[in-house]
Image 1 (tube, one colour):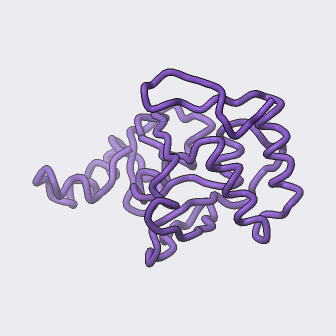
Image 2 (tube, one colour):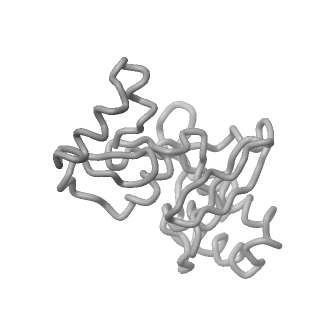
Length: 173
């Protein structure tokens, strides 16, 4: 994936994107976003598109639950967290639902995954479950309880600062 803004950093004129798209050497994915034609896409293509367009977005709540495989919910929107004062990104598709957070509430618990050559920032399992309870009025208490049950039953593990894995203290036995 290539953002139009990335060309500015390399000194290439934007008209080059238009010419490459017209000749079929690039495919326009969305507003200001391009990729090579015929590129294999994954199930995370919509997340990669949003991550490329909005690098500070962190996938949260229902989207993070689905990413981690701890829900039966199929969100109709992609849930993202942004720093307080941010505007909702102008994305035609998919529909985006944004929550705003400040300081540590925004920065803590972010895990980075590489999908479709794009870095996806997703809140970890424990942070996501805690946020589900915090935002239960937006997503529903039943979803938060299901997330907690599924995370415990699947024994989802959190990475530690040393890079090894251990069972999280949030899921007592």
